[in-house]
Length: 218
Length: 218
Image 1 (cartoon, one colour):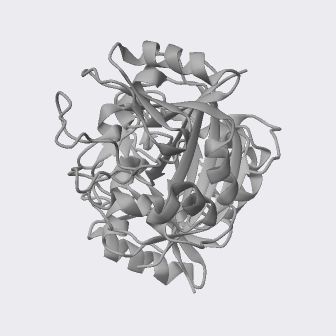
Image 2: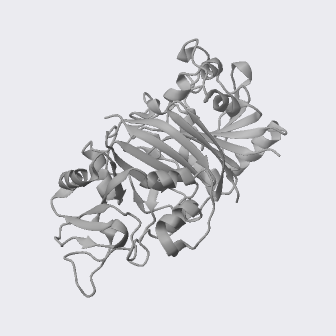
Image 3: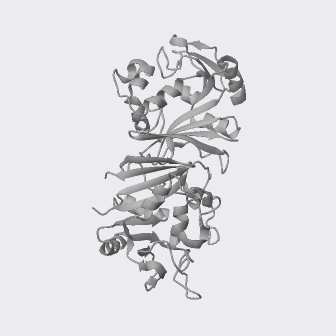
């Protein structure tokens, strides 16, 4: 059974990004340190090419990084996560995402936006498709190409919240790091009490992070 | 080395109590379910006497419940956690806490309040001392009776925040439950970025809850 999955790393005070997010600082003030556990890993560096250097560690988080991309047939993300600039797309030069010529997805990626744009074919199997008719349409398009593989919601918070509120999410993987950001963007703030019924199904303790998998039971 | 410890259970969205806390509903709307993992345990029921029934389970959380009281020589709590009513103490009848004649502490408990009151001797070794000169004075008084044992901050959030902000906390034990409360009281909201430097030192996966121990490294 194909699943809609969402992986996120949050601070102990619940933020997935710090305050004052910008083009230069897409994770906000202090937000990058949330991902230090991943940046240190050989598995992450292999997935992300040159940007994080060669080598790296193998530890209990390696399995989590590998699972994030295993059996994923399509990815969905919001416009702010794809980045660039607000409003209609510009062509001077065209924004092609944060990830260089060979993004770490290697599958079709559906970007939810108000502004239409032709598909953007990148190296390594990643093609960005721009979907202008909302989360359900993006999910249907992703299912059409994913076959029997899962679909990953890559973020950001707003898109993930919309999928959770609509009852469309099946699995939530939370990586909790012992950092306090004090301000920023929270995942769960727009949902309200009891919006999701969750069952804890797996916990992995790793250096500097705890990975918890929750199954959405309704 | 004696430690100042704080155990708390929080929802996945970061609340240790739900909204609309009151005398009848001290954990706020939905707040009681945060502690279902503890209420189910034989170890918890043994500590808390008749209120939660006899019997109960033994599972991976049992160790956590036992550790919460092991080697604790004194307890500190805020006035709201001790409860009763706002303002000067009344005597009609006098409020003696939520816990009946034999509170589950069995050691001296220092209640931080603006309103003086003579010590209140309960059954089973619990004596409530009312401290009117703040968190440092309460800690000094607790240390004086705790000897080489640890001191536990019992809560609530405001008192725990004050100890964390003052750099006096040594250990934080977070029990994270897969519940969304949507609103209520958060532990970390008053602290700001980087207020605590934490090191994850132990994770226990248990039915319906993940227990994470953090050491405060500054």
